[in-house]
Image (cartoon, rainbow, N blue to C red):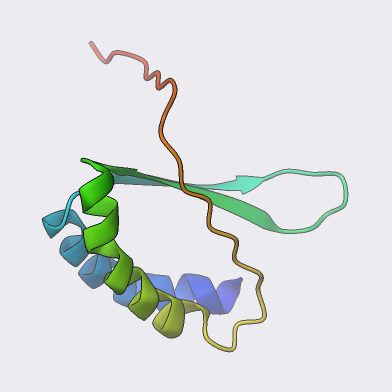
Length: 91
């Protein structure tokens, strides 16, 4: 994971700029705590529309090659629609 983190730190901002220009609204990266001591992460991406997801797809192919190549991790992508979203209001 350290290699992926290093690559993302270097290349991530450029990719995020391009993705946001095509409709990416936000993303959240989190690490899952589990008793098997496996490092697992999930990332949630929010887009303006289904069309924005399609426009971002070619960039994701570049990200896979740049960030995950030879990193020895398993990446599973699920696509769907938010059913509910909640965030605490800030004063």
